[in-house]
Length: 133
Length: 117
Image (tube, rainbow over all chains, first blue to last red; front, side, top):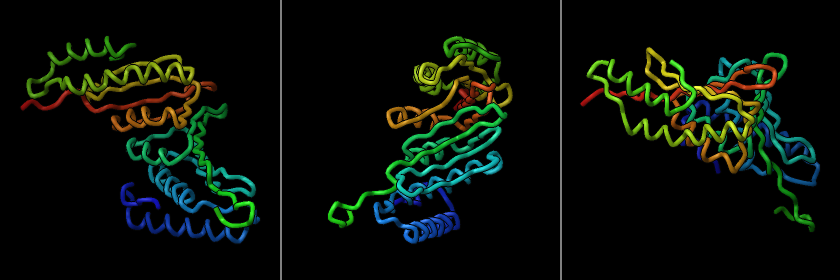
């Protein structure tokens, strides 16, 4: 499982992250289609990355959208909209991004920049006989 | 002061050293460490359709400022390690829109000067 202590977040932030993870997992369980199941460890990485980004980008991001899981999709996305992203702890940023599959920053024509962080493998398939992988 | 290559920046940085108080000395190890990332910056220009790279020294903090103008910034698994190392060397990094088609990425590196002794 994720080692929260290595990411320099406060106990309160860790508690909030764990609670957010639990809410996400509960929501996914209640909405389960039966085709795939959420990879809890991958989801924990996604939620922790979201926590760290919100901490690092506080004050510079205009909007942060967190999309952990869609039906029939194994991709989780964190979308950030900002005029300028200023990161005062680049090492922590790099470590947070190391959990993601990829990330991209690109300019928009409306004067903003868009920062997208993508997590693949958010779900895992059941075996054909119906047993969990 | 602004320069278009790390080599010319280093040359000017050494000249600056002569005008600073004797209590500050140029840290050759930091200069050498940053020099190896020049190839990373050059690669950034290639990978992300970059147009320009500029080196500057902040007159107050003496930090080295590197500004790169690129069309986009996409980091996937093969690139992650080298850019993570680059990020870990910086004290700050910022991303902002340069124009409709380009991003400006500004890296701030620690001062190349340290207290003597």
